[in-house]
Image 1 (cartoon, rainbow, N blue to C red):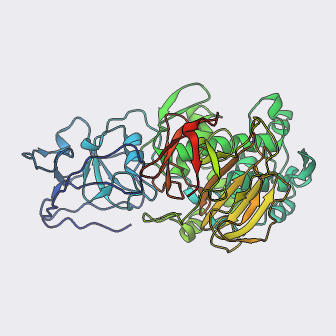
Image 2 (image 1 turned 120 degrees about the vertical axis):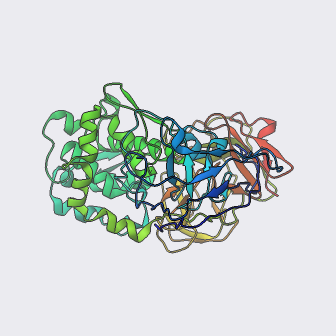
Image 3 (image 1 turned 135 degrees about the vertical axis):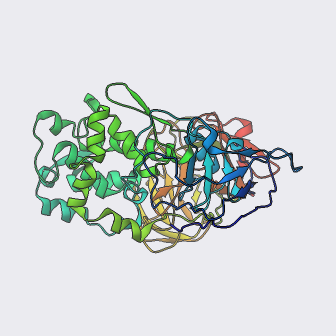
Length: 519
C-alpha cells in the first residue's frame, strides 16, 4: 500500500450529498470528504495490514471537520478531536471490495459519524487505501489479523490450474481410495472435492486443507468413526458422507464471506454458545474462516486453529506452498471500477415470463445473494415440462454442463475461474446446449425445468461470477438484465427489478406484479 504524506495543510472542498440505502438504478451517488487539516511535520503511515488493536499514536491524529451530508449549504463547522473521546478513533484504510453500506454494518456506525479524506461512492465499490476516521464503538471483537486472503476462499484464478486428482493420488491418504454414490453416478473422493468446489465456487486448496485438518483424510486416515462418517464434524444422519459434509462446510464459509461483503454479518457464535463481534478490519476471506471455525471450537480452541503454530494456514502452506505468493498473482479479485457486461433477460424477446425470485443464494441454502429466478408461462403449476426456451444473456463459451447446469464463460478463455461467468440452473437435459459450444446473445440454451439443485416448480435460476466470486445481485455491481436493475428485498427471494419506468416485484406465485416482458 502507498504511504500518505501529511506534512502540509490540505483542504478539500466539500460537495455534500445524501447517502441512499437502497439501489434501484445504475447511477451512483457519492459521499464527499470532510475538510482535512494535518499538523505540519506529522505523518501517518499506512500499514500493510490492519493492526490487531488501534493504539493512540505518539503524534497527533489528523483533525477532520464535520460537514452535514443532508444539505448543500455548508453549516458552521466544528472540529472533532479523536483523542478527546473515551476510546481512540479507528484510522481505517479501505480495502478491495469495500462499499459504504458494508463499512457501516461492520463498524456499527452511521455515515455522519465517519470522517472521509476523499470522495467515496454511496453504493458502489470504494477504491482501496482511502483514509476513514471511524468511532470505535465495538467491544469483544475477534482478531483483526487477516489470516486468509479472499482468493484462497473462492475458486479464484490462483487455483484454476490445480489438478485435484493428481494431488490426491500422490498424497495417498484415505481420500485417494474413497468413493461415494452421487445421484446416478459413483464419484471418487477427488471428483467430489472438484464437484463441491465448482458448484459453490470454493477454492479446492482450502477444501483439501480443511478436510485434512479436521479428519486427516488427505495425507492420512481418519482416526475414529466420527471422522470417517462426518469428516466436517456436522453430525446429522442425513448429512453423512463427504459430499454433504463438504457442502455444509462451504455453506458456512459462504455465509461468512458474503455476509461480510454485504456488511450484514457482524457476529460469530462459538461451540460453547459464546459470541464475539467480527473485527471490522478483517477481509472477507478471514471473516469466512472465523465464522466456519467458530462452529467447531470454543474461543481458545478457535484461536489456536486459526492463529496458532499448528493452524490450518500453516497446514495449508505445507500442503500447497506459499499463500501470499499465490495471492500476489491474482488480488485484488476485482477493481473498484468493475462494470457488468451488457446482459439480456434469459428468454426470447417479446415473451412474457414471471420474475419469481429476487436476489437469493447462488447455490445451496446460504451464502451469496447472487441469483434471480424466472418462470415460463404455463397453465400448470409444479415441475411440468416446458417448451419455452432459455436464451443466452451474452456472447460466450459453454465450459460446463450437467445436472441442470449450463456455465457460460463470457471472456471465452475456457476457464470459469477468470472473468465474468454466467450460471444457468434448472436447464432440462432435452435440447440442452453442449459443452464447447460458442453462444451469441439470444442463442438457444435449453428449456427451463426442475433439474439440478432443489426446485418445486419449473423455472430458471441465473447468477453471475467474476474471477470466481459470486457477484451480489443487489450489490455494488447490480444485476442488470435488458435494462432492468435488481434490488434486494427485506428477505432472500424478495426484491424487484426496475428499469426507470416499470417496477417488477418478485412473486413465487407468478402474480401479475411479477410479469416481465423482454423488450
